[in-house]
Amino acid sequence: RTHPRTNEGGFWHKKIYPYQMWLDGLYMGEPFYAEYSMFFGEDNWNDIANQFVWMEKHSRDPKTGLLYHGWDESKQQKWANKTTGQSPHFWGRAMGWYAMGLIDVLEFFPQDHPRRSELIAILNREAEEIKKVQDKKSGVWWDILDLGGKEKNYLESSASAMFVYALARGVREGYLPERYMKVATTGWAGIRKEFIKTN
View 1: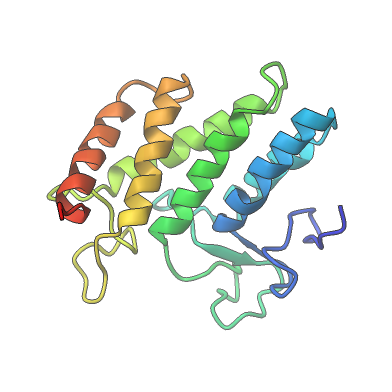
View 2: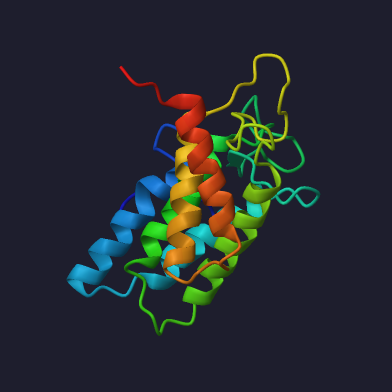
């Protein structure tokens, strides 16, 4: 109730990060906010939906459709683009947290609420971009999504796990078309091959 917000109304990532929204912050805050709202009968649904809408609006790259990790409304941070306020990279783990945040919020978001379809549309847009940057050889995803194979970039286990969870559950819950299950199963096979060892 007292957490600081951007001028638009988006939660700051943390109090020590003024005027900044980060993709991972949506996972930190909104699933709890949604479950709390459901249990205590509070109508916070527009506020919850707006967090995802504003985050996508400010972090989505028009060329690739991928989401930049962070956005600084004040454009004061060293990492912030002086025109857009966006951070410089598409971090796989951050997009994973954002996708999981959407999935976990939809579990509690009222079925008949008019904003529900907006969240499902955002999930579908993200799923399409996740599909495009899946590594063809390994089936998993890179730490920096659009720089596969570049020096110091690497195949990232937690981003891959988050994408598989979000896509598989998205299909199972009926939010995503069936075609994304193939992306999820390919990713799951890649996770087992690339990251799991038998001891």
